[in-house]
Image 1 (spheres, rainbow, N blue to C red):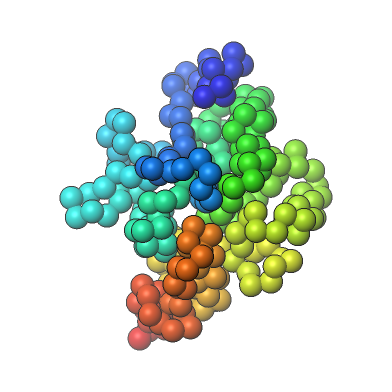
Image 2 (tube, one colour):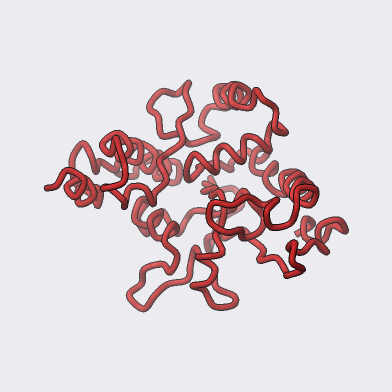
Amino acid sequence: WNYWNRREIKDIKTLDGKELYRNYLSLPLGLDKDETCVVNILHYFTLEETNKLSDGESCFTATWSDGTLKCNTPEFDRLLFGDKYYHRLVFIDVVPVAIRYETVLEQLVGKKNAGVMLAAYFEDVLSILLRVENILLAFAAGSSFEAFAKLMFKGESTWKENFGEYYRSHPGKIISASEDPNVYVAPPHPCSCYQPGKQSNMKTKLWRCDIFSTSVRRALDPSASPIEGVRGKQSWWSDVLEAHEGG
């Protein structure tokens, strides 16, 4: 990547002098350059998940002996989309290096270095996703959407309004969890749907996941069957909903 070869980037270390754990794109095998590409954008690849992996393993592909993914969030995405579609997605992180859960990059590298890294990362990597016509964006949750949009509009206080205008003027570019084509809604974090006892409005959240996952599937394959976990109780959502309702 040009990004990691930038002079101002390659020598940055953690505040205590350690090397950074870089986040790279995870690409599907056999992707044709003219094929519609859906990029699932996460907020951060946590160091807690990194600790489960061996050198050279990716959190999006490394599996246990039973075939499930080693890292929780990607495993929930796999269940959400289904294997056929999960393995056709591109995965990218909106933060270029691994950070600890519920922290921000500047806590790892300092405010100045964090600003330099994120601005260059958007210029060299993330902005390309917006420019290429056959790349569609699917934010994994509200946190990745917010982080991306703030970088997109350089932290302006009107970033939400600006993003809304971009969304309406680029129909189909960004996959939403809303059935209203004029309103962008980020999907619930997939992990939250596996904590039914700690969550509120589960039916709404699972319904949003149905809309989002169906739209991702159909972006890759217009004939894909819909996910109807809440409305039809035909998918893995039914177990989550029953647990939440005490059934």
